[in-house]
Length: 423
Image (tube, rainbow, N blue to C red):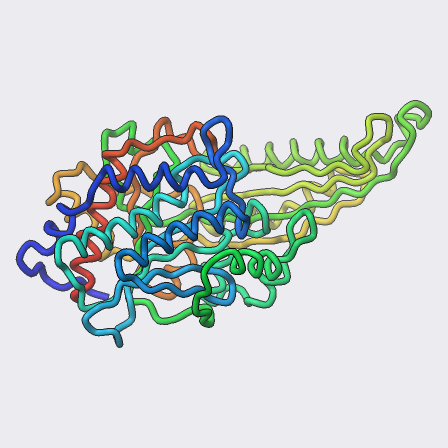
């Protein structure tokens, strides 16, 4: 969509009503749900902690006259009705779930920025022509249920709802059962099919990198998201007695997996410094001190801005692992293949323009982390607004963002929503 020309100082009016203290207090309040002893957050998708966070959001929304609904895969939508209810709404938000040792800002800051932006519009007496919906996507992180971004990908038509609902966590609990339990803990809401027409999607987020802090910029207009592939690799050997089985005769799955992982690291390092390779989960069976491991499963997270290069490396994973894991057997199963995405140029320019008008130093930069904005960009013009996080630390209990920076990003978001809301 094209933003309407400025009507008076509509954007600045909305931005001026963003309340930094209210925004910060709500971050701290939601951080109580799943709080860890070290000051972080452990809030798995569809957990009791996420249900409690959603319940508080619903209370705040009801107090401001917003309506709420969910969909068949558990995405939550809070709607500020527009003057013309028949128009496709603007959508803004992020997610509430976290990593096991996550911080207080990743994901939730986008939901709260969207909510504060709507409150700023209401406080400024602005009722946009187009409705605005604040969304909390289901399972962005992939911490409890794999893969991540389930809710946004179903919304965008990338995944089937039935497939997502059938996925199970490590304890065997399905998404369907966890969703039913969470919904039972909350006030009843209308449930709609996943997906509907959207005029534009805007997502505020901490950068999760050090660039903004190092350059002194407060606002990042995100150019796009680098590509990502994930794999599950299973190495199958043979269990044996640690004291009696000769070393030369062993089919040690853990030693084989270690050799394969080191070979993968060398291959990726040889492809350039921008290749990101992570082995984040390793399951050893039977995981006993005196038994030669018979089976190892590990995950691969492979990322690069160049989709072709990323996929070329991905195509070698099976062969590299099989070559180095012999005499054990190897099976590499692809889970995610997400191409790099470029965000809407017009929205990116508008973000920089608004930041300049509001006096916030801004720059363009790519996102090296994945976000729900990736699938949303395939169904609507999309943009992301980054603010700094201290030392670029994220997915960590030490994650930190300054109250003033969160407010600055929210002011840019509020102004953008106010202007686009008239389009």
